Amino acid sequence: MAVLVGPSIENVYKELVRKYDYENFLAALLLPQGSRKSTIAVRAFNVSLAQVQDQVSQGLIGQMRMKFWSETLEAVYQNTPPAQLVALQLHEAVQCHNLSKRWLQRLISSREDHLSSKAFQSLSKVEDYAEHSVSSVLYLTLETLNIRKVESDHAASHIGRAQGLVTLLRAIPYNSRRQQVYVPLDLLVQHKVSQNDFLRGSDDKKMKDLIFDVASSANAHIQKARTLIPKVPSEAKIALMPLIGVVSYLDQLRAADFNVFDPKLSQRNNLLPWKLWWNKFRSKI
Image 1 (cartoon, one colour):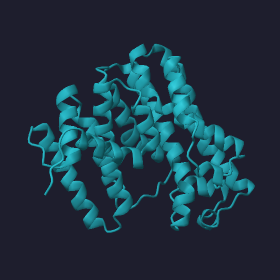
Image 2 (image 1 turned 120 degrees about the vertical axis):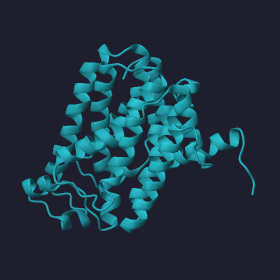
Image 3 (image 1 turned 90 degrees about the vertical axis):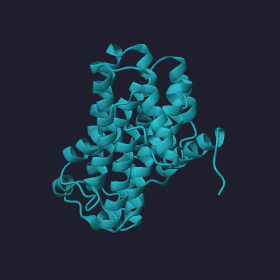
């Protein structure tokens, strides 16, 4: 069996993130070299966990795979990582930056808790899930820059929550085609929207009002993050660039009159690389 060495290894796990976490991959490319490599390793770990949640329909198999990643994480911190590509790259990142184990553990536990049911009872539960599964990656990105400050983490928390809410919105058309609805129950009841409305791609007023509420919650977190960003060290701002993709999607959703099923929303944003580069150049988020 051929063994991947040198640049080939890095290319493989980079491709994993580029394929399944494209916008965050673009943002990671703006980071300094050492931080970039470690952040992509963390994101590859996160993608691997998300794939268990998304691709495994049988609970027992999902639990076994999560157990593998949990044991892998323990081995990484004992300096005995298994000969598995993502594990080896994560081990290198942990060694280089002394990454906090608790954030990586939260990535696992948040996915484990949703293996049996991906449905959310309330919007606040979605935000809690995003805090664990999205904000944790941003905290780790900050650590790769050797930034461990409350103000930076506070801004990252709000950005992660906003990104989690936007991810929920972006996934609606895909999930609806698979006959799945994960929109929080409290919003369905409040707006008198049924699961069938989602499955048939409804774009009536009550559906748009529901989508508007989720988008407004995401925007509230964005505005809170922006009030905190001036207090964040200048070198930390580059770790928070995923915010640009979140704002871009919400702008497109607004232009589509909050019709989440508008086909244009499913197209790749070809302007995003330029927006990311321009905001880095201006040192602005």
